[in-house]
Image 1 (cartoon, one colour):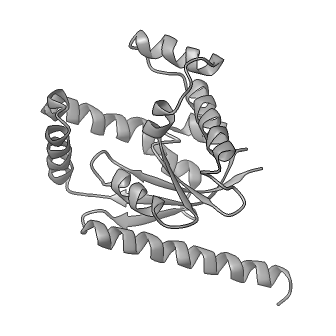
Image 2 (image 1 turned 45 degrees about the horizontal axis):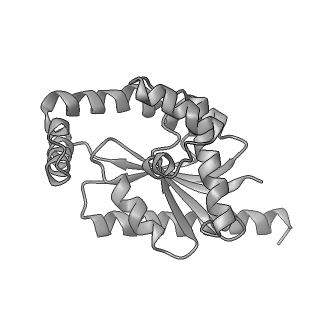
Length: 207
């Protein structure tokens, strides 16, 4: 069974985590961030042990291990009834992180829309990241070098996912607005997508 999904994308500091949490409070939306996956993993399992092996050595966790962890986490949520595939839409934030992960998830997800939170003002992104790091008491993450590396990694590894899904799926959202305005624009696009899909289904039936 392929699960219906909405993907949130954007550079670090664009507000996708904030939007994911807001959407997750709406009935029939289930927000899952990459952080949720790692925090919810069972280290006693084979895939949990594989994650521990790489992370404890300071190495990047391979994409297949990350996706297997995600599948394990989702199975747990289904068992607990926290995610009901028959009625819920997944709102994913931070996964897939690159094109390889997107390919690995092709049999798991029906991606109905990818919302790209666009912020052209890099200074605004940097200021948001610094404020967040200071608020969370992660002083090392507030350095200009760390922020620059995170933004560069996004451009190099994550942004190509937009091209992978294509312009029919990708919806650009102005992330320089107030958060409630961003939420409004996302929900408007969700409604438009649903209406368009319903019209297509009726057309296929000859209605």
